[in-house]
Image (cartoon, rainbow, N blue to C red; front, top):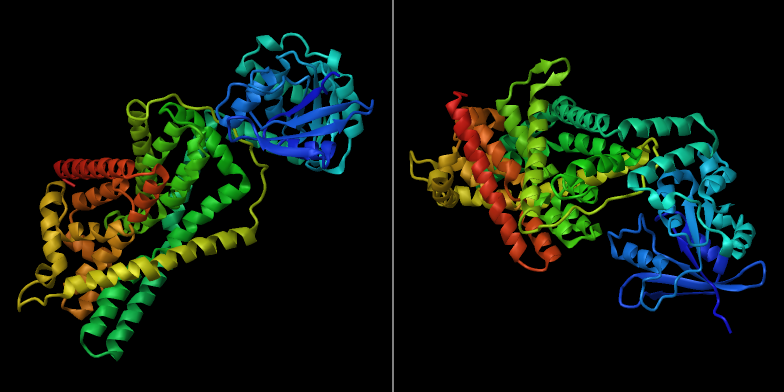
Amino acid sequence: MSRSRKIALVGNPNAGKSALFNALTGARQKIANYPGVTVERKFGRFVLPTGEPVEMTDLPGAYGLDPTSPDEEVTSKVVRGQFPGEAEPDVLVIVLDASNLEQHLVFAQELLSLGKPTVIALNMVDLAERDGLVLDPLVLQQELGVPVIPTVAVRRRGLADLGEAIAAAESRHAGPGLTDLGPTERRVAAHAMAEAAILSESKRHRLHARLDRLLLNPWIGPVILLALLFVVFQAVFAWANPLIDGLEGAMSALSDYVTSVLPAGLLRDLLTDGIIAGVGSVLVFLPQIVILFAFILAMEASGYMARAAFLMDRLMSYVGLSGRSFIPLLSSFACAIPGIMATRSISDPKDRLTTILIAPLMTCSARLPVYAVIIGAFIPERTVGWGIGLQGLVLFALYISGIIGAFLVALVLRRSITQGEASGFIMELPKYQLPRLKDMAIGLWQRGWIFLRRAGTIIFTVTVVLWVMLNFPKAAPGESQVDASIAGHLANGLAVVVEPIGFNRDMALSLIPAMAAREVAVSSLATTYAVDEEDEERQAVDLGNRLKNSWTLPMALAFLAWFVFAPQCMSTIAVTRRETNGWKWPVFMLTYLFTLAYLAAGATFWVATAAGL
């Protein structure tokens, strides 16, 4: 008795293969792993309209026959008949997403070049029509040389026609010429075929296509991305200033109220010099955090962020990475912890390790209060061109410095300890859409609450501990309280190390608690200057003015340079240890980041001093 013919469903991820497989096989299916690999396979039985039973397999989604992941390797070997213990498919059913036809036709051509009996299932035609795109399957059939059957798997539309095409597919082969095409030629051909197959399209669909041609242009696209980021950082200062002024006034009023109702003593000092001066100096930057995340959430919800990943893929390939690393690195702008955890999606272990090691160089939101207070104190609030604020320009430069630093480190790592070639990167582009205000509000509330929770827990705790260390033992008459304190003695020891790069004792002291959370550097400075200021009226002076009176501009610029490269909080180190299964790479990360921070701060201080700033 001859074996049942084997039918393989194959295509890009998200083409609707699983839905089509379920509609064809119903309950007559099983799930298991392929022999020797932990890649899931689904197989079941399907009876053709001729009465012939066939065995159907739903292969893992892939973007090409040159594998970049275990899933793609299984698919490639199965369709080529090279997988041990797996019979070669007798018929390939290539499933295409009608609403994303051009992208899916690239892989379809590669599959057709194998010359196997093939049928095309043009799936999800209802969703394409809903989005204003109507296609002609006969045009595709003529171009590809194999039957093209429109289907809507979830509504069981087109299944009978698909079964008839499969039954007759044994003698059908791909058209000539496909075997000679390279990746670039396939993409050009896919574009031409997709354009030819369009019967009609709505204005909305044409607009989205034009947007992609503009935003994904290899030359114009990066310029637009850079300009957008520039606008974001301008807005962080320009829009937030009135709100920050209001919060600073509220904190000052609260401090005055506590001073008026409580007698002089340790409790009042703790509340005014420790909690209000320390925690309050961080809380005032909540508007800037919210504005930054408003832009990030809007870019994600609109579909632009995925396109930014494609734009970055070309640039990242020069340093040995791919666009697959872009999403974890982008997440690290919010916090390095979720960014490092997101590297689990990177299949290449060396790509993943490199991305983990450079993630702390992305400027997380915890650094923003540090940048804001230093920029606000030392960079004049003036414009350097129409609508271009100098403060926003400096903030933009700090973020770009972190990105450039990350790319340079990645380049060195990929040429040395994580040596390897950049892996390929393909992902589905989401449709453009207007961000929903409700979703934006929820996202902003979550980010704001995380910031407030950190201020109420980590920053509060570290600030109180620091205040205690700054107030004991008590100074002798005429002696500086900070010099006499436990914290002062610790800072004096560290100051010897950082003095060559322009840091004074107070700056050195702020670096210690900043390892718990970057924002604590601000509260540390505020608490230090409040504790050492005996005149209660002068205690009310904002932190920015205190810094201007105590630091030079080269010192301030060196402090900013330090925080561009310095290691992130200990939580980041702990997550790195968990994701790399040991202390080897976290220790390496700490070592190279501290070295970079020291050298960057030193170079900045020495150059600025030599320039007479």
